[in-house]
Structure formats: C-alpha cells, structure tokens
Image 1 (cartoon, one colour):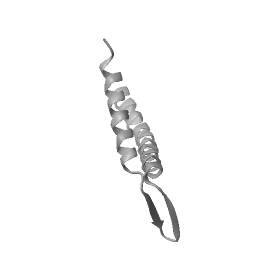
Image 2 (spheres, rainbow, N blue to C red):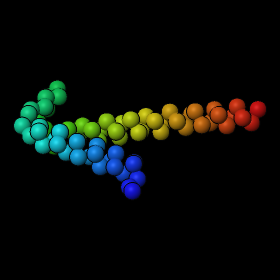
Image 3 (cartoon, rainbow, N blue to C red):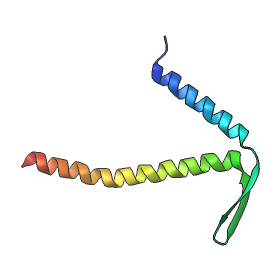
Length: 76
C-alpha cells in the first residue's frame, strides 16, 4: 500500500495539469506601461510560483521574530 501523502500529491498534480491544459488561450497582461501577451498555461504557474515565493519570504521574515520571542520568554 502506498503512502496517503504521495497519493494526495499525485492527485493534486494531475488536477493542476488538467486545469492548465484547459486554459491555453493567449491573454494580455497589462501592468502600468508594460503589456505582455502569453498563454495562460505559462502565466498561471508563474503567478503561482511568485505567490509561493512571496508567502515563503514573509513567513521567514516574521517567523524569526516569533522564535526569538519564544526563546526569551522561556529563558525568563
């Protein structure tokens, strides 16, 4: 029997791939004076990775402060 975590990851990846291949139309992204035309199949993973990276960075920056506070409280 396989690990349930592995099965869940495979199911999520398959669903994500199905979602990507259903969104293959070309769209235009306008940000201030920039205009970029690209397929949604490329844009969705890029936005997802940028969001994960931003969330990870915020978590790391705020997580250290919490760890330092916990250590000073436990020492008192």
